[in-house]
Length: 81
Image (cartoon, rainbow, N blue to C red; front, side, top):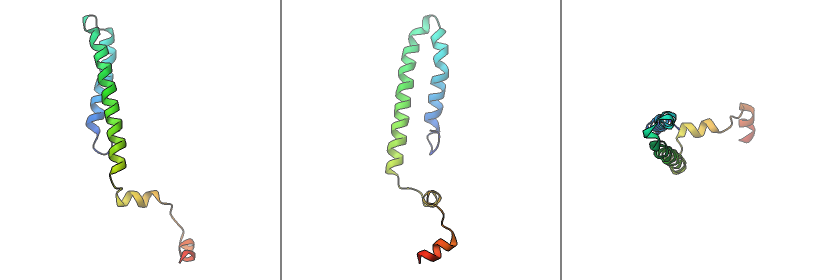
């Protein structure tokens, strides 16, 4: 999730997740546990939606396309021409 410049979303989600157990054992601030759970849900859903939506609409980088295509040997390349 932290790739492609979305490290701020990952950091916010990490902090909210680490804060969750602390709020669970807190006495008077226990109500914030539920609110923090909603924040975690919203952050996770927003980050997932942005990752899915932006990655699908952004054209692939030229180096990424070459890396995903299988390499052909020189004999196969000669046979194809």
